[in-house]
Length: 115
Image (cartoon, rainbow, N blue to C red; front, side, top):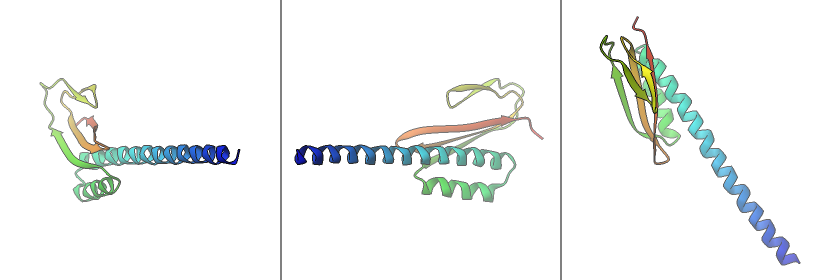
């Protein structure tokens, strides 16, 4: 009976450790995505020094292979894809940041009317 309780306790402990590791990964993923959105907003307003600090924070959380695409305002451009969604980019300034996290390519972007 004691052996069964020990094995059951061990299984429950392993499950809890696994759930804790998944929660940490999810939490970091959310933090990185929020930092990426902040980076896009800073890039829109040409605050490059602060934007560079955001990239460093993202790297510390495990993101890498950063790629920023900037679309200048163009009256002929129609739709662009950001994270698989079509976005109206006609005449707008757009930034799209791609990065790698947990061997997955993530993408965040935004389009705004030029000032």
